[in-house]
Length: 414
Length: 112
Image (cartoon, rainbow over all chains, first blue to last red; front, side):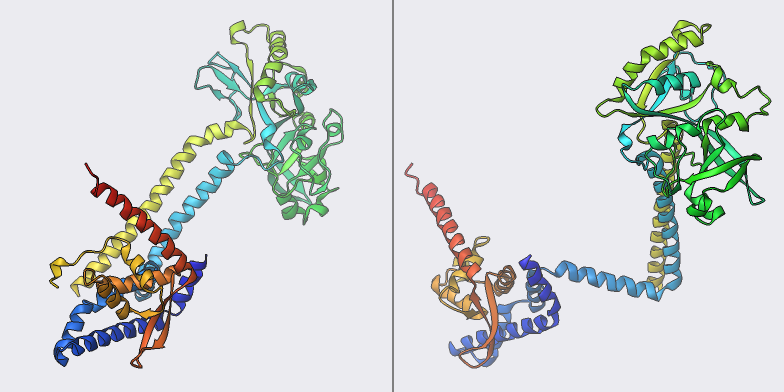
């Protein structure tokens, strides 16, 4: 530290030091010449000998200066000055170079931040490590047309992974208090027609179970969140809206609560607003409206494919995406072991026609990053994309190198 | 003395010699070179090309300090003097040198 200060003050007084160095060498020459004169050499000889003795003065100066330890910095500053001069001399080139580099870097940053939120960063909720996702696995390849959600896919190790459960299975998990602190479910409701003060827009909506917000520990920005009491058949239709929507349509979270909105012409009361950074359990499906699960009884009352009651009565009907928060000290595999038996029994009872070896088995996995289906689905394309934009940056650099080369060759011609 | 009889300085020994030369008191570059040359009975000649870089290096390390003063003949000269850190360094280098020369001596004079 002390030497650093030392060096800094030296840099400060560089000009002075250059002069000093000159004077020091001059003094040396005079001393040397004087000594030779006094030992009998002629004036001319003495001076010449002294010069010879000192050697290449510029080189000596350079070497002495390098002992000051700032030679690198000095050269760097020279380079910077040179670069700036070159840039101001050729403005078009500079603009082009900056533009192409900016585009390359910008694309990289955009893709990386997208990747970061989907693949790398855990959900922005407290204690994301204790979140798990529930899914089932079956060795049967061909499933009954269930491929309607991100979280269902062909298992690369054979078979099929499904990420949604019947209401009965959800209730089974929810009833278990030994491994989970809380169990919550959700399902996308798609884009619903949101009408407020005679203005309509499409709003991404999500059905959430009553435990959803408390399990994700989301504190409302205003009002209150959906509670288990809101999520039952016949409860008043309520909705929680996203922070951004509250600002764009209602003029702030405080003004949104208590308002009546219409979703596909069905009135809902806004009871609360999510916190600012809240993205739900699924970073790929960021809803702006959250409504209780059971409101699908209202919204899908005129569903052509049958009464919505089947969501809650038919145990063959898988539709709830289930996540849970582990009890402290319990691992995902312990939870899986504890619940596999009851789940298998339920499946046996509810799907008697299915061949025994094809019956689904329960899979409990880390859910800190939210629904892993999203990661699975986007991971590869994202890495490819990142590679591509990396290449774009490389191409931008190559372009600039080419341009520089051309400028240099033009300079040589003139 | 012909140049071929002179000894080349071992790497790192110039610093030690400069520090030792400055132990009795301050001195300027030319005088330091001459002192080393004379004291070594002309066996060692300090090249100017290595003397000044060494002086400035030692100064950068804080072992010697420099100041402009008038020489005996009334000319402005850059005088170097030993700092406290330099004295410590000298003692350390000196004992290292003694250990080294003893070790080399032991091997060279081995009775075998």
